[in-house]
Image 1 (cartoon, rainbow, N blue to C red):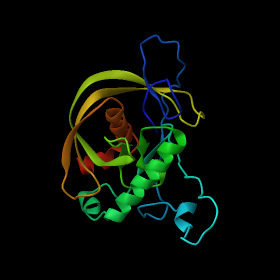
Image 2 (image 1 turned 135 degrees about the vertical axis):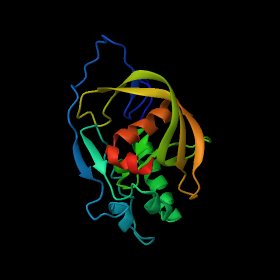
Image 3 (image 1 turned 60 degrees about the horizontal axis):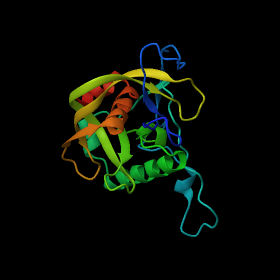
Length: 210
């Protein structure tokens, strides 16, 4: 699920949506609730996980499962205890998967369920432009500049939907490399990505984490 402008490549694009616009959009639907992993583990298994150093040929394509808003997720990882036990190797695996999906679909916003990860996290480009960074369990401390955005489905299977979001957020979150929360201001597409993540999990998840 990517956030950007209508210019350029793919991704789930967020565009300013004025009242009375000619853009089509679907009426809001009641999303179904699903689990990210049937086993209750941190990750679903990708074919890429089964490869070894001795395997020949090209690597399998990333198994990205983009969400068009018709599904929201529940998980056993909506607690500070479970997050505190997140191994650094799991964070590295998540960032790698997010980078693969971002590159394959030319998007700058990846949500954890889209890479088969049960821990609620958003992934946005690093400040140096190399790879993705993880924003896990984000808690919004303050927000500014609300606007209506048109969110387009990266897969093209669903019509756009309109969501009210803030373009500036002050957020407390985990980076995946430390158990100590950090606080940062996010603007524009990064801020939208955090809010899309929070819309992708059941409210009870955020009640437990916030």
